[in-house]
Length: 252
Image (tube, rainbow, N blue to C red; front, side, top):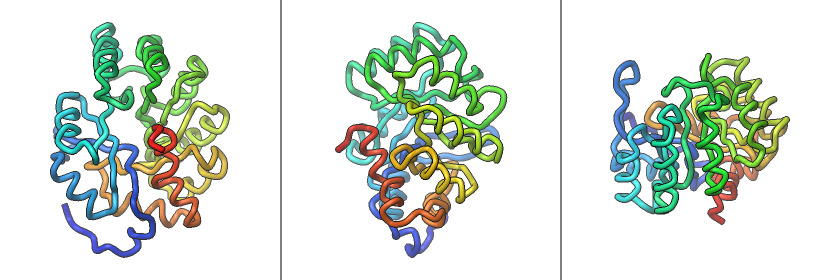
């Protein structure tokens, strides 16, 4: 991975990455990162902690065990697996191995608000676990579907990962969807419009927007710089890069 000289990326330090991955993603993705590589890159870009996930939870837990101060695990579970998925979340939560639930409707082929998701949402609420949901790709993970899930489970704490991702209509929908529901937070990794970061901060709420990298799918420097040039002032940048996710996760 190419290195970038520290300059503008040091405007806010340290940072907490609300959305990243370890492991190998093959096929069309063609990206991979080990836990060791991730932690080294985090140090270079002033990222003190990353919330990570991977389809094989053993990979995530091994990484977290190796770097417990830098890496925080989410349980990536497929609700199509029914009781197997809910039992896995129960076990991981009871052992205090994970800090939340990761749902990827696109990867695992279900609509975000489908009834198949309900047992995991009910358990996440019971265990007081936040739920990070991939958004931005039809037909499975559109912001409207995440909004409908939030309506069904007002007690759930839902993070709309990528806040609509790469499509302008979906990005705007993510902002408007979260604005109308106080149980949705937004995470901005991979979302290309720097101006929408400022808009989300102002419209949705100063405490409900998180910075993320989606590493290794995206470069730390690009994801950091997009937020830093969004129009947020220094205090607001500190909210997005660190303060908001710390409060959300109960780390301070």
